[in-house]
Every structure is written in structure tokens, then in C-alpha cells.
Length: 129
Image (cartoon, rainbow, N blue to C red; front, side, top):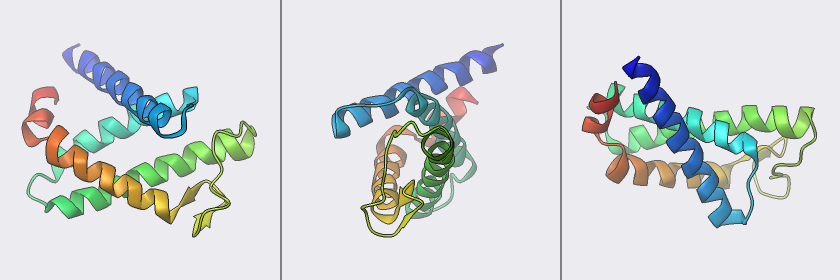
């Protein structure tokens, strides 16, 4: 039962944080980003715990790949399949179907650096899992 509450808390925390970042960055968000943020945050915590001996840059690279892959999956569903127009990276360089692009993947790398350096520490993983 404790694990259920831990996962729920972390999911809600990640979803809220992701939507808050979007509101600060773009001035708007979409409910799908809440779910993406919750999923991503739990995976990042898992990465932190499983890769505790790995260099920080390797964790950041892994995190950026996870975030980019999640963004691509959600983009294909909400933007391409259901035409909700949540975001469009078509005008940005090195984009894939307008759903992901290299500049935002680099931004996710920097976000992971902040998270793994100052927020998601090794004891954070042990505390919840």
C-alpha cells in the first residue's frame, strides 16, 4: 500500500511540476502534459537509483532520451492522431514529424542536469522505493 501512495505522490508531483514549467515557458499547458510529467518524473527517479554510480552527464543523457521519447509518444497521440495542436516543432531545426527536435532535447538535458544535481538525489530514490 505504501508503494501505491509513493508512486501516486511522485506522479502528481511530476505532473504538476511539468505543467508549471510549461505555464512559465509558454504561458499555457494541456492536460496531457500532466500525465507525461508524472510518468517522466517516476522514470527519472528510477534512473537516478539504478544509475547511482554513473557519471552525472550519463544520467542527464539518459533522462533527455526518456523525456524526448515520452514527448514523441504523446505528440504522436495528441497532435498527430487527435489533432489537438498541443505543440508543433515543425519550424525548429532537426525535428521529427514536428513532435520532437534537437533544441528541446538539449533543453531536456539541461533540465535533467538540474534535477539530478539538486533535486533527485540518491537518498530520494531510497526514500520512495
